[in-house]
Length: 165
Image (cartoon, rainbow, N blue to C red):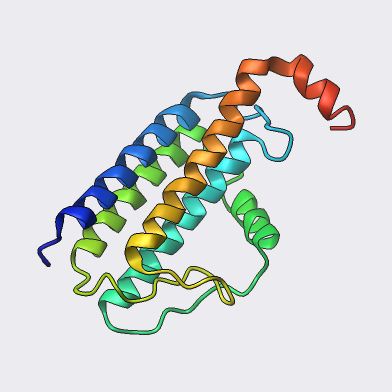
């Protein structure tokens, strides 16, 4: 196991806290809650899907291999995630998200060089490991804020802004 610097520990701890909060919220919220773009079920399924991808990619980086990256569009990948987890309960998906976060944390602790590029999708922007973790955390937080705002505003707000859904 590689000795991490303070900044790396902080990034891992911050992401773990965010994932834990997301799992707690999404594991208990109505799966049909919608922010106008995605339901809570769709959000959680794609967060689990992506976290599994992050673990897989990190494992290949630790092994010194080049990761095989997905070439589909984000919309296609999110549809794949929704289909893959359509029969999985919200609570079970929340548990999977936590499990993948634990694995990601363990794998990244074995990574000797956090300055290497950590890609997540073919043709996507390259980021260092530390910067990638910030992007992942920001992505999760954006989804949570949108769903929580929709939950606060209620169904009436949703019907006014999205009458055709």
